[in-house]
Image (tube, rainbow, N blue to C red; front, side):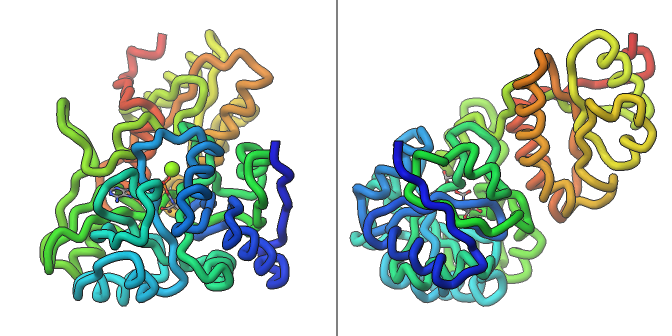
Length: 351
Ligand code: TXA
Ligand code: MG
């Protein structure tokens, strides 16, 4: 077990100490605006190997590299004009761009592949940490592999205490879902490999062609290795309920009578179901997509916590709607957490 130092992300001296640890080969968990990252010096293959060990991450799943300024990518990736156009529009911010890599990046970062993801976070602590480290920072999300990504300091302590050299406390992450991952595959074209807060609509204001390649059809090979792994899963099975709101509520009430289950719901539902409030986890107001994104992973972790004290059999939530904005990102995480299990509910299903 490693000795894990805990640092205050609002204190410049603490950030400097953590940055120094990272530069010298240590593993440091740091906050970003999306989720917390588990960082290592991207030029140090051995340190990067330690990231995979600390997370229990499969070795064929590459890490993205974090920079303080978009132009810092020049030292380890081949940029183009589109990269800078996208960087001007969306960096710093929740966007990762995949570029061809230079040889300075060790194979451990890219899982032997020829491309590398570049991300420039907007969280002030992340920015300062990377700047002070003076090296690019390779970092996946700071969860144990397969668990929901961490969006608070407490989540990071839960998963990483004793496995890393330091954890920087930056409070709660503002976005709550991981960055949009987009492959630059032409002078004017990108392919979204993972949806996030930088939407397809937003990207299409800068690139003339925006393709989407994140919902795999049977037998399709993923363009992003991370897409083939079950992810974000709470320990009890999650079911996505597809139906009118009153049918969903009836269905959940009935389930609550006969099994140990939880309902991840909205504030409006919580007001109506106050008699079973101990078995509800709210994502915020029904139409507040930013709140749903921000609270989703914490809700899945809260369900796991509840399951430690109860024989939790099932977790229910609404099947996500189709649409733009944050919906594709929320929907992608929910579908994966539920292993694509959607249950149609109609009036008669509540038995
Ligand atoms: O918001 C985020 O992106 C967070 C914070 C810490 O920056 N990081 C994060 O990293 O979510 P990770 O490793 O959990 O997810 C990165 C995803 C994985 O699905 C991985 O397979 C994909 O990006 N990826 C990384 N490098 C890639 C590459 N060169 N080509 C294709 N996909 C890549
Ligand atoms: Mg991850």
